[in-house]
Image 1 (cartoon, rainbow, N blue to C red):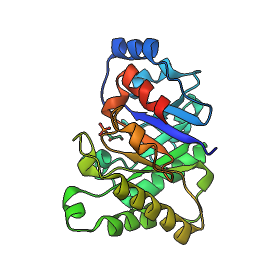
Image 2 (cartoon, helix red, strand yellow; image 1 turned 90 degrees about the vertical axis):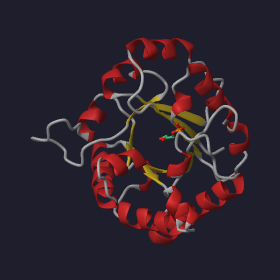
Image 3 (tube, rainbow, N blue to C red; image 1 turned 45 degrees about the horizontal axis):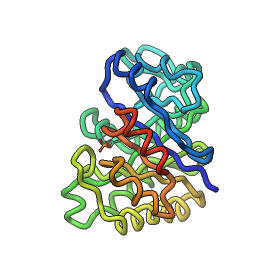
Image 4 (cartoon, helix red, strand yellow; image 1 turned 60 degrees about the horizontal axis):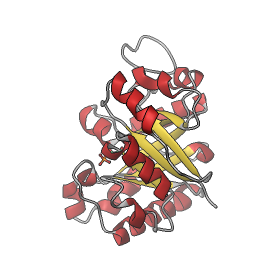
Length: 238
Ligand code: 13P
């Protein structure tokens, strides 16, 4: 059975007491083919070190070291036991002006460090309504990846921006079609198969039906990953 990924993106949420409460109560009944991961705020990372779940960062610098105040290098994250790094989340693209080209530099940095990159792509509501989803995703794949990458250390997370934190989820058919489209793009452009995750309002309510999508290789979960019981159910359902 292929590995499925259940990754939590905690964004800028939780204080120490919430993290400790989560750790005490997080008890997924998942199988060995489900790889669970959590990307907390960096100051909380040490609570997750040496556990079975993967530790993730929500972002990293494209540079390996130097005078870049406020940044964290991928190689220093790897040295602290991180396993993966999200790259190009729509909030980073929107609020921190990250372009596809910057994402590619960051993916290269994570690969130099030996981390998995979870490259986030997705269209806005306007683009969705204008029927431009595939065009946008194709460009994000073409410009954000290149043939020199180690594709064994890459995951793609499809997150329609309009589904993030809104409770709106595309239909199962749309998700399936879009994941297949992304998988075809990486095969055509780079002759590589890349595990493809869905993200955007994933919850314990919809995970059962999402997990029936055969080509879904996992989920990237925001709000619902903050609660131990909720995230446990999501991991167990996969
Ligand atoms: P929600 O699950 O809260 O919609 O967030 C999704 C997300 O942005 C994960 O990266």
